[in-house]
Amino acid sequence: MMFAAVLIGYPVFVMIAQPQWVFSGAMWAETATNYYPNSVSGSPWSALFATDAGYSPVFLRILALLPVAFGTSATAIPYVYTAIALLGAAVLVGSFCLPWFRLIIASDATRLVVVALILFVADFSTRTFINISYFAVVPIAACAVSAALADRPVPWWMFLLPILALTKPTVLAAIPLVVLALLFAGRRFRVIGVIIIAAAFAQVAQLAVSSLSGYALGPSTDWTTVDKAITAAKAGAALPGSLVLGPGHLTSFVVAAMCGILVAGGVVALLILTRRPGTVLAVAGLVLIVGNAAISAFGLSFWWNRGTVDSVISDVPISRQTIVAYIGAVFVVAGVVSALLDSVRDRLEAGSTWYRVLAVLGAPIVLVWFVTSGWYARGIELLPAPAWPTTGNSAWESHADQIDRGEPVCFPVDPVGWGYTRGCHLGDGSAYSPAVFSETPVSEIEFTLPAASAARLAALTVYAAPAGGTTGSVTASADIQSARAGSTILTATSDLPADGGSLTFTTSPAARAALGASEGLVSVHVTFGVPVRIAYLTGEPTQPAMMVWVMGD
Image (cartoon, rainbow, N blue to C red):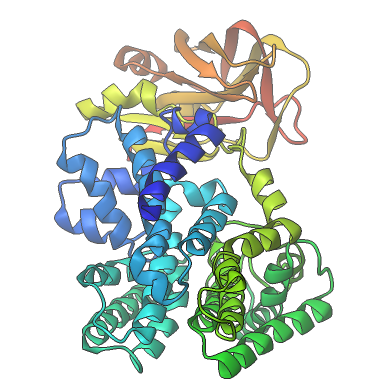
C-alpha cells in the first residue's frame, strides 16, 4: 500500500512543483546527446553498452530502450523520458516501503517518511532521466542490510539488483555493504551479492579503461593522489556531522569533524549495546556518506578538492554529487531513532499504552529532525524548476519531425551549452556562457559571424526573454548579409519562458546554397516581433550569447 502511494504520490508531487518542466517537452543534457542517439543507433552494443563520461550506464540504457521498443516518436520522447524519470525514482526509493524491509524498520510509517525525505530534498538535476540512477543506492543498501538480518531467503526480485551496479559510479558507495552482507546472508543473497560485486568490478574496470583512453568523469585537474586522499578524509570525517545536524550549522571543519566522529562513534556504540536492526541501517548510512566522499574526491576532483571541500562540508549543497551522502544521513537518523525506540519498547509490557505510542513515534521524530535541522527549508529552496540558463533552451519539439525523418539537424537543449546534433556541429562564433539578460528591451539586434561559419550555417541560436515578464510566443527574422552572398532571410518562432529561452533560426537547403558564397565577416540583423531582452555575454554588453551550428560531422 505504501509503495503504491509513493508510485502515485511522487510523480504528482513533481508535476505540481515543476509543471513548466514536466510538461515542457524539453530534453536534458545527455538524454539528447547520448542516450537517445544510442538507443536509436541500430547497434545493440551501443544501445546497451556505450559509455557516458567513461562509465557504463547499462541500467539507464535499458530504460532508454523502452520507448524505442514501442516505436515512440521523437515528439513524444521527452515526455516519455520524464515519465520514466518520475516513475523510476519512485520505484527505486519507494522500494524501501515494501513489507520485506520491516526487518530493518518495523514501522511502515517511518519507512514512508524516510522515502519522502529523500525524494523531497532531491535537486532538479537528480530528478532528471539521466540522474535518477543515483537513487539505486537505496535498494542496494536496504537489500544488503535486510539480507544480513534475515533468517529466511531473500525475495527473488533481488536478482534485479546487479543491473543497478552498472550505473553512476557514486552508486558504488553501497558495494561495501554488499560485501559485508555476504558474511551473514543466506545462500540466495550470497549468489546475488557475488553478481553485484562482479558488476561493480566491471564498472571499475570500464572506468580505468576510459581513464587511460582520455575519458573521465569530470574535467582533468592537477590535484595529486595525496590531495585527493586528504579531501576524502576531511569530507568523510566531517560530513556525518554536517549532514545530521543540517546545512549551514557547522562552518568550521574542526567542529564538523568532531561532530562527525561523535555521530559515527555513537552509531557504533549503539550497535554494540543494542544490536537492533535500526543500528545496522545507521551503519549503512555512514558507509554511504564516507563512500560518497571518497568517490567524489578521487573521481570528481574538479568539484571536490582541497579548495572546495570546506564549503561542501559547511553548506552541504544538494546535487547529484552529494545526494548519496544525504541518503546516508537519512538512514543514520531513521536507524538510530528506530533502534532507540525499539530498545525502550522492549522494557515495556506488550500492549501497554506507552508500548503502542512508541510503536508509532518514529515517523514524527524523524520529521521533527527533518524540519529543525534545516533540511525541510533546503528542500523548499530546491523545489521550483530552475530558470534560464538551466531550462528554457530546448528546441526539441520544434525539430522532432526532422529527427524522425533522419535529416541533418542541430538545435539547443537544456541547459545552455548542450545541443542535439546530426550532420552538423557547433562552429566558430559560438559563445554562450556566462551570459546575462539586458535590462533594456529591444526590437532588433545586429552582430557579425565568421564567413567560414556563415558559409556552412545549419542553424543559429540566440537567447531572449519577453519584455513583459510573462511567457509568450515570439517570432523573429534574421537577415544574414554578405557582400558576395547577398541577403538571406531566416525565421524562428518560440514560446519563450518569462525568464528567457532560446530562439533558433534553421537554414533550408536553398538558404545554405545561398550562404555558401559568404566571404569575410557576415552581418546578421535580427528583428523581433515584440520587444525582448537579449542575453549578452557577461562583460561584453554588445556581444549576444549565441550558438552557431555548421554543417558537417
